[in-house]
Image (cartoon, rainbow, N blue to C red; front, top):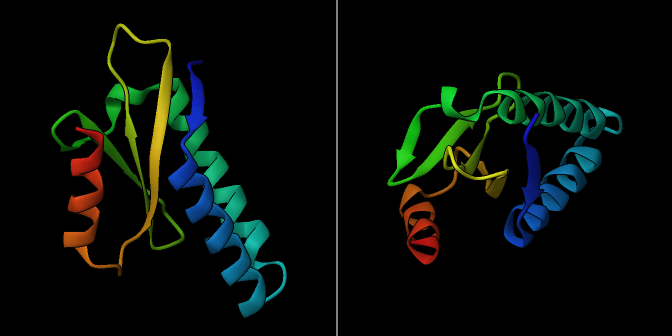
Length: 103
């Protein structure tokens, strides 16, 4: 398995999502976190199996929650860097601006 590194922006988004789900219904935050961990595990096992999103960034759509994990991985690298844990209802133009910062 390849190491996963969570960037600071993604960590903040994760914290916000967990907090929001907890406020909505205690226990739901655990289901969200479990689903995210499941996908991070899949990403660490086969990062190149996920579709390219923009440039060299890839995306993984969570199955049970409206989020996608945006990450970067090159075959010669030893880690996957998670750049964003993006709620899919957010403005896509804002996401593109965020991705521009990493290019």
